[in-house]
Length: 86
Image (tube, one colour):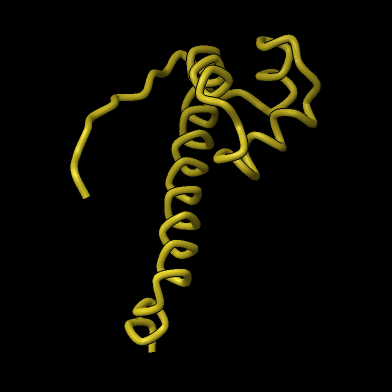
């Protein structure tokens, strides 16, 4: 069933976007939890409202890369970037 649904290019693109967002969300949460920071503590480090941390974690693909990098830096983490072809 999944293969049939993903044969449609529009459905496939939506699935890939959701998968990418899920991976980035997990990366951010893991970084914060490894740093043993609450959303409030992380927000203080970034000098932003805790609600912004919630927004970043809920929809990381709607967040610019500079903010993602600041978030990770505040968690004493960094992202390992590699380029691969599709």
